[in-house]
Length: 109
Ligand SMILES: [Zn+2]
Image (cartoon, rainbow, N blue to C red; front, side, top):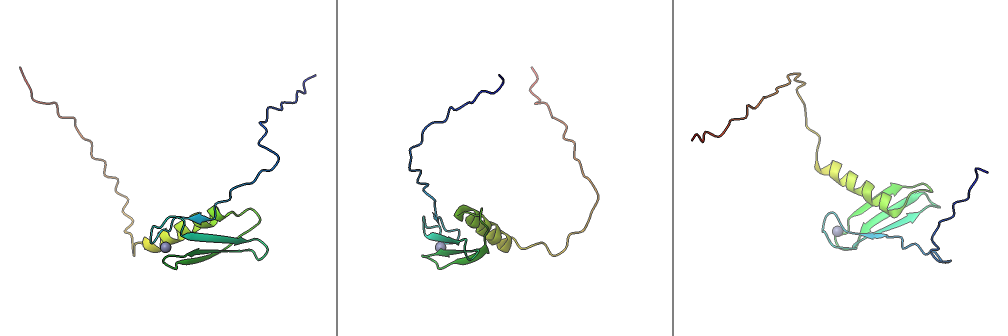
């Protein structure tokens, strides 16, 4: 008798209409809901477009990809484009740990 069906699901209504957000804030012009994302699962592509500054981004999608995924991908891509990688990093293996001695306040009585 260890099987107890726990059905504490709240009825969310017969028609679950998910408000899939497909409009987002533009990274570039910062307009709200100016970025429109169309996910075409049949074609396997997503097209992101800002109607204000005409910024575009295209990405591949799969059956799990949502518009928000494309959006975050776009953010990553834009982020990577902005933060250009450092030309060369000297691999310094010096760990400089500066121990800070807590200086007590010289407030003698
Ligand atoms: Zn824009």
